[in-house]
Structure formats: structure tokens, C-alpha cells
Image 1 (spheres, rainbow, N blue to C red):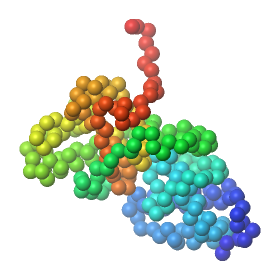
Image 2 (image 1 turned 90 degrees about the vertical axis):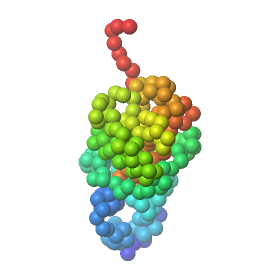
Image 3 (image 1 turned 90 degrees about the horizontal axis):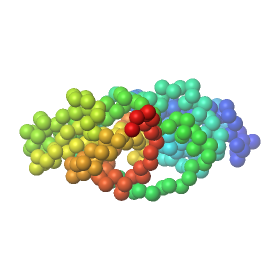
Image 4 (image 1 turned 180 degrees about the horizontal axis):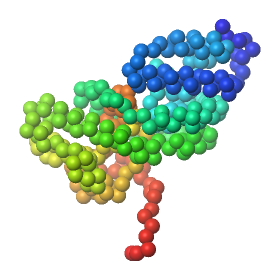
Length: 278
């Protein structure tokens, strides 16, 4: 039963820590394919902290919204709501600082859907660009999803392998098994500096140079692009494509980006090469 004295009052740190920990327990079960019942978790949590069902559900949605900004998967059914209290950012910061492994999670193997379900439209440039609250902005900087995905080599390789399998299946389904056999995982077989990861083909036999960018986060999660990749996009704009694999831990989806890149994404320099020569 809810504590009437708490109705409408701000959540305390111990209550926020409890709901964040419980949320991540459910999320781990979701990502691991283990059965769990959200209503049972909510009921136990309400009994423990004395908050109403509505308040608990709303806070779950707040947590989903923060994880979405952090480029992390969130629990289906708890649709992100972004009218936050600043205290939730601190509670999630405390949890992630104590449990950093959840940030580097690599799926054991996402379920492949039919290719017509996997490919989705790219996000519109400039849409949903409302500024983040400053405390959330600092949290995103601390657990930078762009740097995190870039550093997570196992996640990157898993995404590339997923695309290789998908491309072979796509070609074989179109009665082009001859081309399916020629699909190559270039970054694994040759080097990681070719400017693309997977060599595939369209149904006519024309080469497709696929640069795979993978995240467990949502479609709008930013990503890094190297000079090599940008140069290859400019050199072979008709053949080169980004495959942006997102929601990889839950229900993988892909959108494609074609050159000129400046029409699809905002590009800005992040690092510089320092040398003593020309």
C-alpha cells in the first residue's frame, strides 16, 4: 500500500536507487531471454518503498528515457518519458559507476528477422533536437555512447557478422547464391583500414561496400566515422553505404546512409592527428 505522506513528494535517493537497481534486474532478464513479470517487480517495489503504482510506472519510463539518451537498450513496455527530475540522473550515475559491465554488453546472438522487417527509414536530420537538461548532458558525456560503441570491439564484430549473414541470406533468397558465396567480411579477412567492412552485391552483381556501425541504442545514437571511411564514401559514392545497425541487443534494425554524407548526418571533427612533419 502506498504511503499517503509520500504522494506528490520528491523521491529520496534510497528509493531512486531501489527502482534503478530493480529496472536493471528486469532489463538483464529481458536481454538474456529469461522470463520475468513486470507487474510482480512493481508490486514488490511498491510494498518496499511505499510509492503508488502510477508513480512507479512513470519513474520506470523516466529511466527508459535516460537509457535511450545513453545509447542503451531499455525495457519494452516502459516507453521513454522525458519530463525528468534531476535526481534520477544521479541515481543512474551511481548504478552505472558501480556496475560498468552493463555498459559494454554484447548480445549472445540477436534473433534475425526477415530482411523486409530489419530495414527501416533513417532518422530525419535535425528532428527531435530539443536540448538536454544540463545534468543529463553531463551524464551522457561521462558514459559517452559514441566512444563506448567505438571501443566495444566485440559489439562491432558481432554487428558485422550479423550483416554478413544477412547479406548472404538476402542474395540467396533472390536466387543469387552465386553472389551470396562472394560476400566477404573484409575487415576480418583483410584489414580494418579498407574504408568499409563488408563486400556485398546488389541483385545485378554490382558491388556494395558496406560500412557497419553497431549500437545497442536507438536509431538516433551518434557514431564515429573515420577519415578512411569518409574518403571511400567520396571515392565510390554509388557503391559505398553505411549500415547503421541499432537496437542490436533486442530487435536489430538497420537503416542505410548514402553519400553525400552531409545531407544525412551532421559531421564535426572530434580528434586531430598531431605530428612534427608536414
